[in-house]
Image 1 (tube, rainbow, N blue to C red):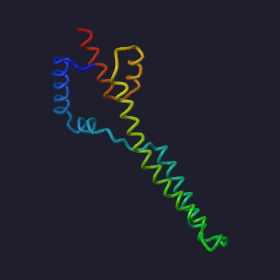
Image 2 (cartoon, one colour):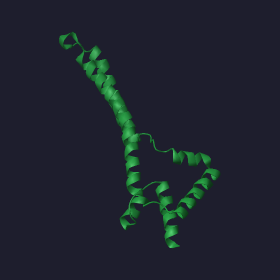
Image 3 (cartoon, one colour):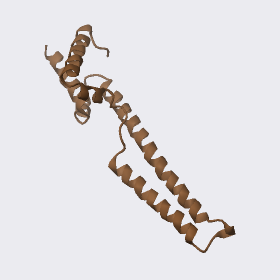
Image 4 (tube, one colour):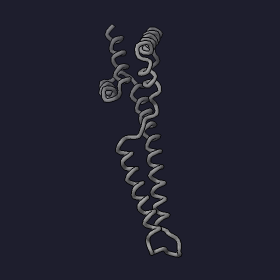
Length: 138
């Protein structure tokens, strides 16, 4: 449901006041679409990278090389490459998930279940909820 002209003016006033009060915070909130990867994802990628590095070195040092080719080293390289891909794709997936959840929460009617979803969201969702409640009371 689109905002009325009065609501749009009020939102613009709130945004301009936010920019005037704290421009650094306002720019970080506005440009906060790309999220960094979680610490769990970083830990998983680091563990996979270490495993791949171990396999890479062990494959070179191992006396067993089927066909004269260090296949274990190749597997280690693939695991290291996979760790890098996991880290990079994890960042883009979490950013896409946050964008999708933000759109899904903000669009829709005024149901009681929707309010519960918003409260579990971030700062901007709570501020939007408070803003809507003010105008519903008038």
